[in-house]
Length: 560
Image (tube, rainbow, N blue to C red; front, side):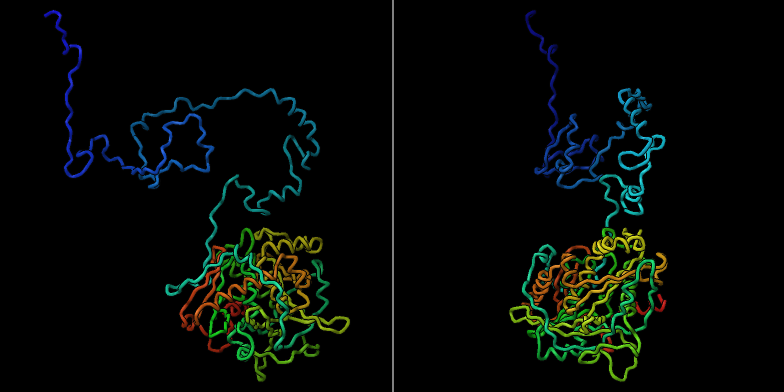
């Protein structure tokens, strides 16, 4: 018996655990107290398994795939687990900062730099008592007034861009037919389009006053308020186009509508054009009571104006101011008066009757046609603003426009009064960068009308805070085709974009359509809209003068 092994003393006893049987499903029947009130994190088999602990600190370098170990169900605070007991027992041992001993290696090098740096340093700055004073050029480059965002930290993106509103609210009963993105439109081309042929010419033009070519910054001239009627009649309200549509052409528009479509790839703001297809004819119109003809300001700038409407520097108020300046400048530079000679076209102004005694702006209308191929004949109304008498006695027709300066510091531009006389090219390059779409549309309108000269005026505020008083600082003239090449405007691409939209509409059934530029994306959309859309907005007088020019009138009379 002594040799008998006592197994009970050597091995502990084993008790069989209680096995729970879940009759209703799978998993435990009861939740242990340890896991109560702990959120459940769902797991997917597609999730990657990460590392329990990484002492090499290489995960911070992999910024491209920061969420590669994240759950496919999403992440958030609702799945985060914090153990309060462990957090409360954590204490800092020592908060004192360890002072590093002074470095002796660079002592003699610093002394050598301090001796040689008392004069001018290598970057053109001036060292005084070990501190560098930047030169005027460097100060301007780092001054936050001359460039927003210069003082931001590297990689800081700043506030998100402001979402712009569309020019018209898309309704539920509109059907989207096509989306045309800008990268595809830029690649279009329709070469070998010949110059337009005149069908009808109307209106009366005044001659340009050459004394305005001698205006400069030191010899500025105030901008006058000229009270003249400017007609902005849409396509279907034009009596001449109604007459011509019975015999000539199958696509009808105005130069402003064509320029908007042709230069659509340079636009950032939203715009829309109504298209009606009747049989084999297409009519392109602008909506009534719209701001289609208002000139944009700094549309293509890196930081376009974003103030609210209560400020004079809001996008809408700047557009009204620019349109007001453009109309007054185009009339002020002409020789007005009853005794001054005038150039008259074959027919009189079609938008005024003979018994009306009103002051109408100097404008000449050319109704021209273009052969676009595939039996597409375009008929459009184009405009001239003035005429110039050459030494040989032949008239040269002009398109007169005005660029305006509102606040060079807020616009992140150059000051015209300092650069216009000495560096006019820099001023024009800055305007081409900030107003690429507006200048391109002016150039297209001048090319379509067949103008011999494109006259640009430089108009600035007397005081940047006063948007009611302006002065003319200078003028500049270009040949439209040469200026188009200078601003990298391809007329072949412009005709290609127009032909693409025409072909797209020609394939549709008869009805009313709308093309609209997306307010926040480089996309143009074509919608099929009901025939009665916008009918309630029609004006009673039939002339189609829009709300934007009523605001310009109010602006001129200080009513806004």
